[in-house]
Amino acid sequence: MGMLRIVLFVLSSLLLLSCSNSERTQPGMLHIESVDLFAGDAQKFKPFLGDMSGAVKVSYEGKKETIRAVVEVWENGVKTDIGQAFDTMTRASTNNRHYDGQFLISVRESDANNEASTRYVVTSAFADDSEQSSVRTELDAGRKHMARGLIQLHDSVQVSEGEQVAVWGMQATDENAMHVMDFSPERLKLAKWALIVKLSTVDGTEVEK
Image (cartoon, rainbow, N blue to C red; front, side, top):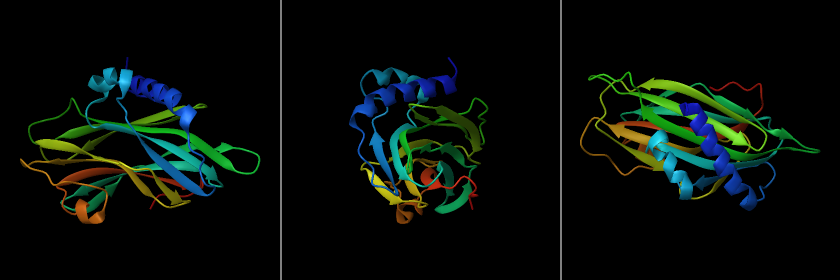
């Protein structure tokens, strides 16, 4: 089974668990809730997805056409790159548009790694009860990483339409120690290298800056 198929299969399983306890989203707000990706029987997928993996529940009701995921790369405390946006469409209803699904990400070292630099394979996916979509990209860290750790969302968050919110991340270093990390700019300034995923709601024609 290929990596993308594994990701989508895990997402489908998570959707079955989350449909019964979805929270009602305030109109005009994007609601994000953390998910234990490897809870229960899903633990068996950890060897395939890797330790640097995570998922969140995504709920929205409003006027925007798209849920957008953007990956930021931070190096030595400075945001150095913004990856290509990955979108999924919200669903049309009588008066508003809505979305109730999951976002999942898995980051693993590439088979093309060498002694001088670490390359990562980043697999991201959106899924709800109507559609599943995924994208796979590779990132070259530019140096050989010795250690890595997750940056996780621990509480549910809610943001207004058009506002970005950090939902998942990882940090890595070529040294023997790492700082305790969260999504605040103050902590990210301490990161040797970090990958941060942000979600937002946008109109279909909006271009990421």
